[in-house]
Image (cartoon, rainbow, N blue to C red; front, side, top):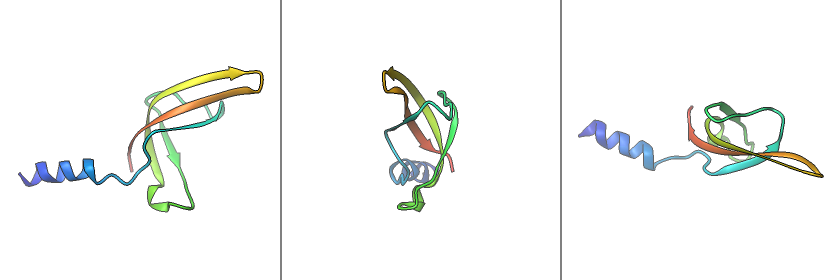
Length: 74
C-alpha cells in the first residue's frame, strides 16, 4: 500500500511545467527527445522534460515549432 500511495502522490504533487511552448526552428526537437528548461523566476521547475509532440508551422514571417511537454524527468 505504501508503494502505491507514494506512486499516486508523485503523480498528483507535480511541480513541473505542463502544456506546450512555442519557439523557433532551431534547436531541432522531435517527439521522444529530452529538453532542458531553465527559468530564473521559478527555479524549482528547472530540469529535463520529455517531449510528447511537436508541430511545425511556416509563414511569410518564418517558421516556428510548438513543443508539447510531458513529465519532468529530473
